[in-house]
Image (cartoon, rainbow, N blue to C red; front, side, top):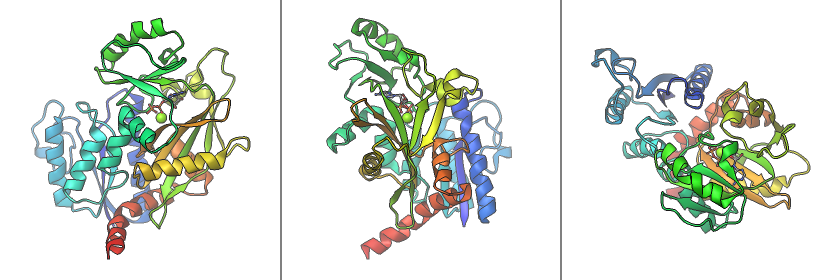
Length: 355
Ligand SMILES: Nc1ncnc2c1ncn2[C@@H]1O[C@H](COP(=O)(O)OP(=O)(O)O)[C@@H](O)[C@H]1O
Ligand SMILES: [Mg+2]
């Protein structure tokens, strides 16, 4: 098969951003093993520096604008004529809506592409919208309200966690994101709002308890298959320190938080079937495709809440998704192959269903 691997040139020095390069290497390695023809298409980055295939003749100097990036990408894709695009575009400096932006472009130009489509990327990347969808479909999620720069009373009982609505990878989430005092929260909200470029902030009930991640991979029938349930255990956590998987826990390998958030699979004392059913419901409600990961929390009374559904989750070798796949007995190349097949055979399946 002819596969185009698209990715965004990451922001230098930002680990959550540079991680995309690991994913590119992993996908390319698998494409080689699987014997597919492929070409890698970076989006963004410096002018004249390897942007798409015929980059050499492009004028040098400065970073490409989003418009130019899209223009060159489409031009290069048209020349390469891929059967499938492996879409690893995660972010662009100018755009908080990167995921849905590229999904809609690929849909418009009728490319088969991996991962979620426009509708799902829209509803899963915006945390405010995501919660509306979950509430509508009866998926339990912590109560929340949105702050958009206008001072308002907090209508929910404490404690709370404050999260920028359009970020992922725990960007903007650390111990100082958790509050128990309304006055303290109201005082700092405008600063947090400004610091995150005035994107809406989600003020959510903080679920003090256990954390689980459930990865799903599409099977041959086009259904989501639930992989083993991972619990993130907070080892030796000091009393009073919020049990959260914040930015440091995800990205700073030297930190206490990184070293002491440990993944355990299928813990016998957790309501695994109930959580798996919720993850599958998210797969269906958000119309997810290929691969996804659902983050959940459980309080002390065993109430389970969906924190978020992630379309196109990280698939680098040390990611939660790959750990779950490995636990299920899958090799990296099996995962890559299934993700590609889900994109390629989707069209065939749709035709079969229609006819
Ligand atoms: N309502 C909540 N209660 C408890 N912890 C939360 C809550 N929301 C987020 N967290 C913590 O913050 C982490 C990141 O939040 P999440 O909403 O998943 O954002 P991101 O998209 O950045 O991953 C979660 O994995 C969890 O540890
Ligand atoms: Mg998350």
